[in-house]
Length: 403
Image (cartoon, rainbow, N blue to C red):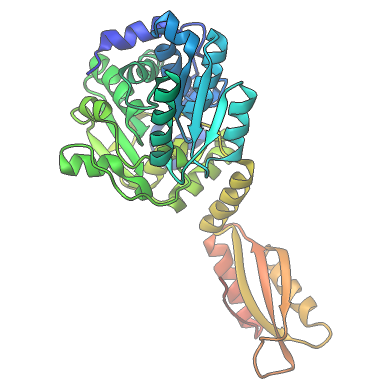
């Protein structure tokens, strides 16, 4: 169990080596949530996530002989990058074991930062087992990415900064996977601002903290693939749980569509890029589950920005679909000259934009004079799409949903 003094000591250790990230108010996010939103931009750290805080604090407390031998950790990416970077600054060799599914951008970044990367296992649990084996073989210090007390204390420094930057905060919304960030920030905030609400947010595919609360202790759960890969921990840390559980006022769960839409909102409204885990606090605000925070001063932890560019492009498109701004339907039109032109004219008349058209003659049914046209269309929202389809119906064009 760490204390506020541990967090304050960690702050002194990491000063100058970890960025004091801004926490500005956001007019557009406040408008769409109905809250007074402040965004803690820790994705601006050198390696793109808050993990540098704990990594630096833990590395600086190692004995000199262990610093020479080096350290090892298992990580899906962010902890690995933080350990590699801060280890490089301190001259401490770092080895990281990453699951084979780890985002390519995170693997590449670790290698660029000088870490030895070992890919092993289909998930974090298998990677962690291998990391412990290597630690014993090579006498390396294993640094847990979310349950080491030094890591938790380091992550808690973000809470100290938040209290300074938003002194009258009403609530802070924190993503939770392994629980280290939640434990550290919750302890700092509750120690200095006891009246502030601490809200934990989970992706519903990896809800290990909720499972631990229900069981009264950390338990291993089955996890599913999620956009919030940084939260994909099957069992919350025991130290983290012991610290965080009494301090959390509420847990909110969000789904994959809500995470995708939130990533899109940050891109469009904040002109920033966050990964799935860091988008969950905004997803919680947009989910309608926190009406009690209307008009309140709320801090969102945008704690990581390491999203694979290929994934980002797919996520943006999914967000557009969820918004009703990118739509696909099949229209049945005449296969005679002018049929497609008429369809395009009617769609254009509504103000919608055709992005792609694909003809389907082979499977269009028994009427050889008709053709099915798969249309991908850009619209303003769901209502606009309904207007497009109503217009086509008025002009005798049958449409139906396409998957």
